[in-house]
Amino acid sequence: MTRDALRASGLFGVADEAAIDALVRVLRVRRFRRGETIFHQGDPGDALFVLASGSVKVVLPSDEGAEPAIVAILGAGEFFGELAILDGAPHSATIVAVEPTETLVLHRDAFLGLIDSDPVLRRALLASLAAEIRRLTGHVEDFHFLDLPGRLASRIGRLAASAGATTGEARIAWPYTQSELAGMIGGSRQSVNRLLADLTDQGLVRLERDRLVVVDLERLAATVER
Image (cartoon, rainbow, N blue to C red; front, side, top):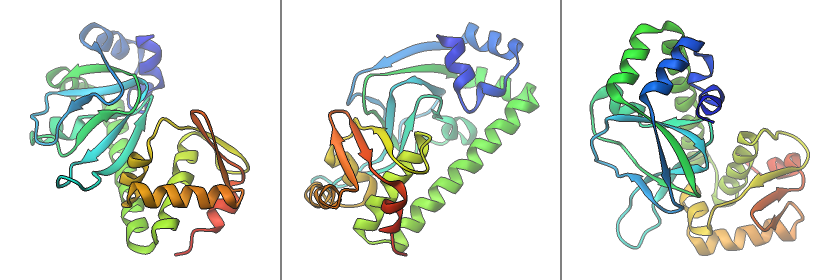
């Protein structure tokens, strides 16, 4: 399980067997319940977390009464905690498990030792950081140019793309509450409820227990006006 999870990760999937062996010797497994906080914004960071299963939300806490901003949802194969390791600053966001989640935890010194000694892993880390910058750029673009319905449609499209679907029908794992979805797009729970109902009435999406079905990704994308 541990080796498979490392092989499936965007960072360690490029590692050779020697590096995987070294990782297995030093990492530990931590499991979290749905809704459990893994660390808070401002906490010191001394470990990298690789998601073996489940998913987490990256949260910027807000004033009491306001919806917190959810800047990302990370799933199996993705990782977090690297920024605090690289720059020595406290964690820039709070991480909360969206569903039962298993992580592989690598201490700072072990992680930096591997990165220092393995140029392939170093390039993979740089590529992952570049991808994160591109994702955040898209996030800022959505907030700057799109209204709330457009941000919702765009976010659903991005979640579908993360699940490997780009055309036709998409079935997306849906462990999110409406409050969490509101936090992703800068809306309120009530407004998201209305917008989801509108998309359902238009025949663009439907909810099936723990999944959101996008009936036609192209039609959904056509509703996004910049």
